Length: 226
Image (cartoon, rainbow, N blue to C red; front, side):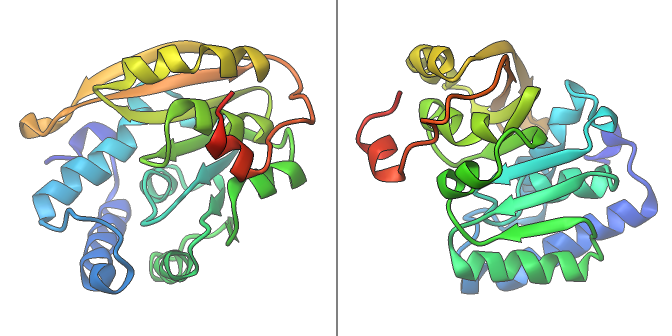
């Protein structure tokens, strides 16, 4: 019932159920999430991840890169709902990458590339490549922009998942947007079912090729964001 708005078939629902069981079983080993109760996982993780489909036509996206994939959110629910997507998972922590590989094998998900490294390093290697980039619960928006925008094709979209306190991050990101030649298309606000919180998806469009200065080494990004 919770996921009815996303028109999932029986196989997709079964994959999400298997995802939940594997997440719960492996969570203590990998420290993936503080949320483990089934209803909460389905709303705060799965529903929230899929909510981007209310505002974005994923059938028109072919390649997607996820920064800081951790427990696979939002990218694995999106891959389940839109199997055609070619996915790259970037996760610097080896244990979490092992979890992601096992999860994708369990769910029989194909067209997935696993990058056990840092987004700023990968962004210098694979520039202007992806139709879309996602990030959820990773870093503040000014930092995320420097990691995400170089990976995007011109006119590609960065999909930033944020909580209800996103406005301060948007104000802080004005300089970064200008330097990275990107613009916020809009902010899509929504409520999770059963009163479990307010969320927002910030849709950011890349306007032109990114200056090769970016992304900088993470030590510089962390010391002073753009």
